[in-house]
Image (cartoon, rainbow, N blue to C red; front, side, top):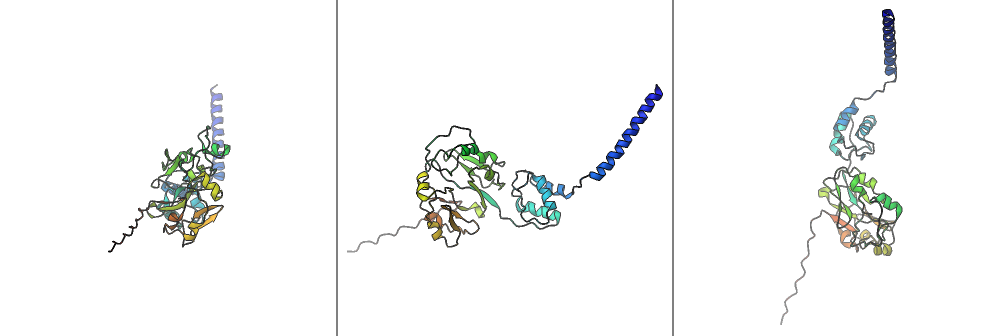
Length: 287
């Protein structure tokens, strides 16, 4: 009996040893080598896993940085230039300069300007509402107001304004991850170049209907009149699909287009108040 147990133990031990040797050689042959620099790069990334870089998460982005021959087309919007420079130092590469951006809403149609003509009684979800009907107003391009973009933001950089029923972007908190851009089914949010003091001039409208139709639906709609194009001395404004667009790279913030727009579709944000020109005084009457 003892010899049988002993033989069984020895046999099992030998099988375990043989299996261990086989597994060792299999692991050696099929092991996947991982560059240790991936861990170093991932450690300096912000760990937001927001997808703003175009990859599923920070780990995937770190792998892409290590594997890339250059950083061209690669950028971490949350970490910014400092993070990219640190990654470049680890990998012995050069970080491409990228202008910081900020999200803007290309719609300014509050109920006062865009009156409601119907009522939506479905789920509070912009994508569902967009797939079902044109909207509660006669503008089929405007914000649906259900807050998909706000829920998509992981950084608390957006909230819904109860008065305007439109999302508000908090510039100081916006990291340009692009989550809100992807969440909007009507492509109403754009990442634009961030200027000093967060100043912005842009067309807050996305209505591509012809002028009269757009104006009937919303008082602050762009009517593609072309006045802004004519007054711009820097070729920063163009009109396509019945809609004006201001190129942030060319705009010099002269603000002439803002005062020229007859519908107030162009917004100027974070600028000091305009100086009011004093009215000319009437000359005293002489006898």
